[in-house]
Image (spheres, rainbow, N blue to C red):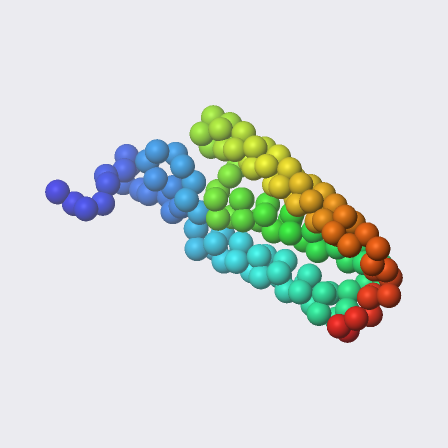
Length: 132
């Protein structure tokens, strides 16, 4: 018996097995890798060059790139789409997005409160250029 599964009509589509799950192709993995690298390099360059004039704009830009990178990983490496597994993959994607939003919002909230409450008498404006 052969090690390869026998397909009807003697053909096998690359990136798919007989269960209907999409496993991606070399090209899709390469595309995902290139997109992930670009989505890492751009925010890194922005931060290393000193960022924008507004710290808020810099933070929002970096967070935006991070969210897009999460989506790239989910689509190209985890193969999440609306077609497979009768919608369960889309439900997993929605759950993942909700969990990530809760984690990011909670982390920002905790860091803001720690910064505000740990040293309330400290003048934070005088340390703006410290370490630059």
